[in-house]
Image 1 (tube, one colour):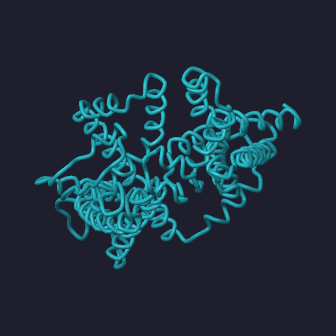
Image 2: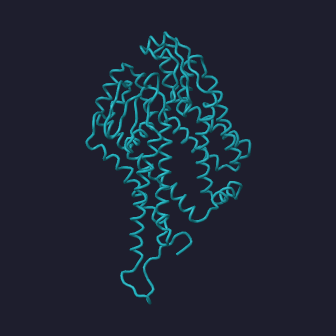
Image 3: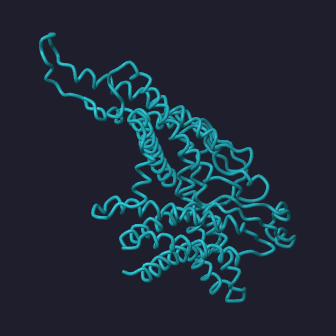
Length: 428
């Protein structure tokens, strides 16, 4: 594949990612335009709505300024005043990352991978800019700058991850500038590499465990409250097409719900409107939107709700126990290295889940709906404390067990131990 074909192939990959992302909301909205509205409404309205939803799913802020007639028709007095939408349906961002990862893998296998990656990123940015410009109206005005940059950054993140993994697996490729840059970036002392690498791996693993348990909790809550979910579907009177559109919208928010469930397990919980709180200790809700999945929200006080807070503690402890091979087992500084390693794992886990909490929340409408989601600062602090302390204890316990296993049961000064030797870095 020559340079021209690589560029065309990469541009088509970017076009496919943008087309799939905008097409997911556009298909059900177009069906509603044809069957429900009988082609009486300008189709451009549904195109702009699809672009707004796609950009909102990547974190773009959208300013809404409905007129008085629309506010009266909706029965919401606050809707007459302009408000901002920033609650991102993260399903679109997740889809962009996964498709970008796939595109990065495919482009990295071509002879001119650097050219292809640049063309893919540039094409995606250009398409995002054009889509953002077509969606701007007096009533709904997305940020053109955010609508161009944020989706592109999400796509580039997946693109780089996919290309990086493929480059690592291609052993026969020649070394280039990226290999030399990676060597310079990782040219640290062995102890620093050990702590930083362990923190990144351990913190990510702890967050993965918390998110996995949160996904299970969310599925159980929906299954237990299935009757309430169906009742809200029936009460919406949306019809078949409206039900499909409502289901697609809820599926786009599944990553948000998982992050909210994780914040519930951590302790701070989340809010559905200003003044509300959903936490392991109690739930205080005011009026909430009639979204069917919200019927799965736990209500009242929980006598055993604090058990959910054991999840980050257990995750941190086991991560620390599995990380024992990264911590020296002997020497005067072993205690401080253990404490530093456990604390750094907690900090990384707190940063990751705090950023996810910040991205999963925002303003979902006027009035009290301007506050939805978890408090990212409290989530980050609680995760850092719970995971950090537990990981330190796990490291200490595993290190002590490993040290006892290394020493022989009986020995004399003249005997050479024949037990296993613990290898740390380049030392024995």
